[in-house]
Amino acid sequence: MVGISEDILQYERLLERLYSRLPSKSPGQPIELPQLEVVHVGLHTQIKNFKEVCDRIRREPRVVMRYLLKELAARGSLDESNNLIIFGRISSQTLNALFNRFLMTYVKCSTCNSFDTVLKKLGKVWIISCLACGAETPVKPV
Ligand SMILES: [Zn+2]
Image 1: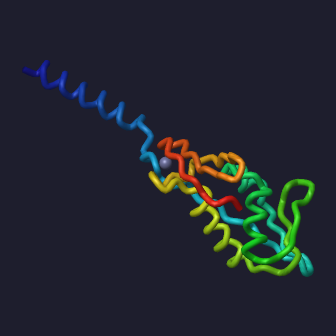
Image 2 (image 1 turned 90 degrees about the vertical axis):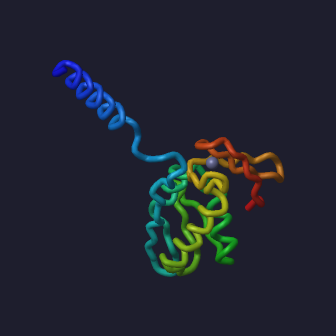
Image 3 (image 1 turned 120 degrees about the horizontal axis):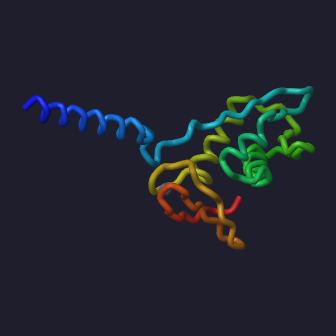
């Protein structure tokens, strides 16, 4: 009898070990959303971590820039390290709110809510292709 219960205990321990090794994050859980680091230099607004953030969400800096500038009706450009400079003073709050909107529209998978997606451009048709669930969602080009 003692032998059997020990077997069960061992089996339970084994299961526990197995489960603890499974990733605790369920699929479709949003990645920690990046925030833009905004600094003001004179009349310009710089986003210090622009390239890093774009890399993280797998979007071309040019696409994100075009979206932000269009929404702000501002002009700007990418510097030599692909960080964004906006000609005008835009608050960090405004920029991050806009950037959040970009994430919701051009990064988030509408099927499983994952932010683990890539943007495919097929001419005038843009598609968000989800790396988590495989769904493909067409979006309006920026
Ligand atoms: Zn998905």
